[in-house]
Image 1 (cartoon, helix red, strand yellow):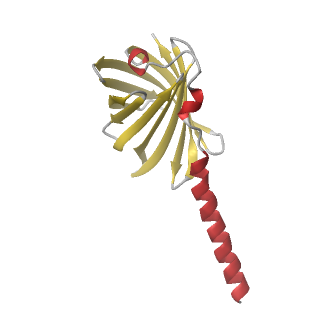
Image 2: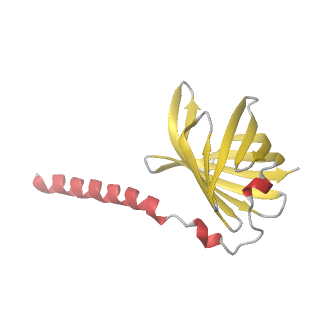
Image 3: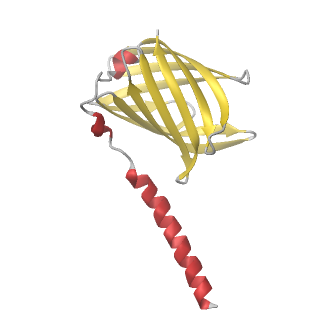
Length: 181
């Protein structure tokens, strides 16, 4: 009787260790320091930008597609991104980000549905943006971790891949293409 209990405990301990280590294997944004063109957040997110995206479950199934019109403006080290989403099911949403440059290549951001502050780091053509979002699903609201990676392709195009997770488990991905007007 004692052996099955020990095996179960070892299995649980191994699973917890693997989940804990899965967050440690992330790429450092500095890896992209030599990549061109260099992303200047104030320059790129200034004016009107269209974004086209989709949300996929862990299985790869596309659940929602959407279009976002972003009106972006900066005053000094503070930027405002007014995002207006239109989803494939006809629903709409607005998110207004306030972003502050907090140092060379570092940013902090807030929005009404973001818990605490978003933290951003940029280097070369890349930006990593991490935050916790209040995500409404049916009649419930979940706090979901987002890990966004944005890569500037040229002066008009930027690609974004976001992973969504809860307690270290992947929920799905958001893929976006930004197109500056």
